[in-house]
Amino acid sequence: MPATQQLASSTWAMILAAGNSARLAEALAGSGGPQRKQYLELDGAPLFWRSAQTFARIQAVRGLVFVFPAEDLERMSEAVERLNARDPLSLPWRTCAGGTRRQDSVRLGLAQLPQDCTQVLVHDAARPFATAALARRVLEALEAGAVAVVPGLAVTDTIKRIDHNNVVVDTPERARLRAVQTPQGFGLTALLAAHERAEAEGWEVTDDAGLMERAGHPVCMTLGEEANVKITNPADLDLLRPAMTAAPRTAWGYDVHRYLARDEVHAKARPMILGGVAIPGAPQVIAHSDGDVLLHALTDALLGIACAGDIGQLFPDTDAAFENMPSAVFVTEALRRVRLAGFRPVHADLTVVAQTPKLAAHKGRIAAQVAQLLELPVDSVNVKATTEEGLGFTGEKRGLKAVAVVTAMPS
Image 1 (tube, helix red, strand yellow):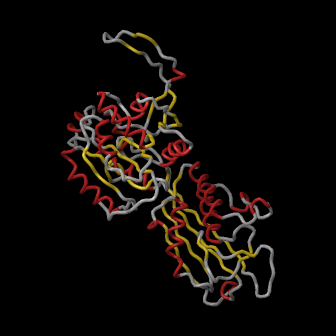
Image 2 (spheres, helix red, strand yellow; image 1 turned 180 degrees about the vertical axis):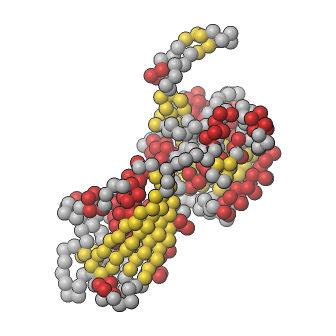
Image 3 (cartoon, rainbow, N blue to C red; image 1 turned 90 degrees about the vertical axis):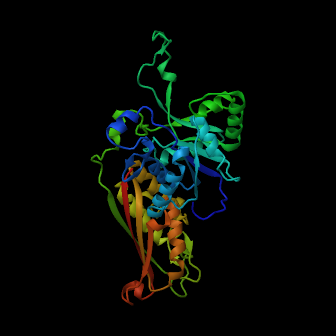
């Protein structure tokens, strides 16, 4: 695993990849493929890696635990090492062997969590299409006070309950039924206690939500996703084949601010902030909001991805509500619109044009701050600084400008 890290935050995610793929074994063997569905490839990597990448984009998640079959543990730990070297998660991770039953695998995975972990997301590797937005909904419910949260969808088929002779016993009211998905979120203390009781009293459950129910905890439900399909039956394998999808999008944004002139007094003079990072000793800028020219350009680029107009339409400088507003608010709203449009940013290239101040010492912090705002790895954000060789208003040290280019993929 990567070098040991001490973590201050409380949420880890667990990816269960320890199943034996009983319902798919014949189809996989017949195709000459791997015998376990969690090792099937999607976008050039095993299914479990797709989920790992999704969790790695969520700011609240501070680490991952992969649970593999005991006989595959060494081989798959090496596979995670290789995948992480090729496509870094930028999170600490651990691997462990699972057990015979799903609940055994979860219990063994929980033992790998650090002492400061207080919440856990438990997810099936066979659900590779779960999105970061779904996981965030589960986490938001936990933060609101729930001890157990599951995503679910309304059942559209009529459900019948049968006896051992295949005779219908009754028909539950469909309006009160939900199909449950993962990731499921739990307060760690309560979940550990429920697993201890299950071991002591011999409980058999199909998921951790059932375990928490039996232990007497209320289980809250949040909205699931139609696309969050579990790869279970041979027909589901078609979902892993390449298909025509929406094209990626690239958009750019541009913004300019002038400097406070010498001996000038202006009510809207602001200390310089770039990408959310204060630049000490820099000229003040004239702006309605906090004057972060780089985040303003980034906001316009994101709005371009979403085809949602421009920053002036959404946050007009004539509106007193936005006076001295942190520009991170604008980025967050623009990012929300990108997600609603069905896209997710994957890369940002940012350029500041200024004769003064010198920005070389600040570029790393700016990249890290922007990456956090966009929920991207730091190595997916590039920050550049240049001058215009003394030409124009920037060359005359009367202001600065910024350009942002964002690339996004269909989510």
